[in-house]
Length: 101
Image 1 (spheres, rainbow, N blue to C red):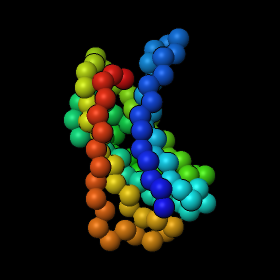
Image 2: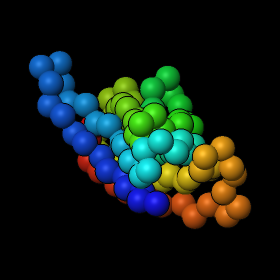
Image 3: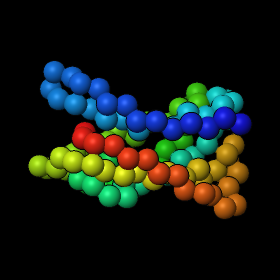
Image 4: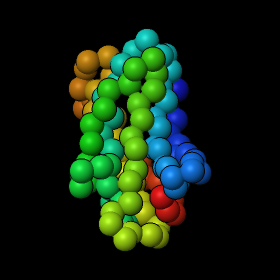
């Protein structure tokens, strides 16, 4: 297996957009990923601080949004919950940080 996570920050006409991505190989094996906002003035939209997604073609995306008036550093955590439909016995969390969005 190969598992990678990264954040992208894109500048658009209407402002910046930050996306957190988890990539998994082999692409035909779905994994369930839980992402969490650990600190900072951001959410995954709708005020959500935690979100679960299943990879499609090896990719899960989480859009990171600023809270109203929020600018500054933030920290995300993520954990693999299942691989190929089988629960992971003891998932080890990973973290990352950024500035923005």
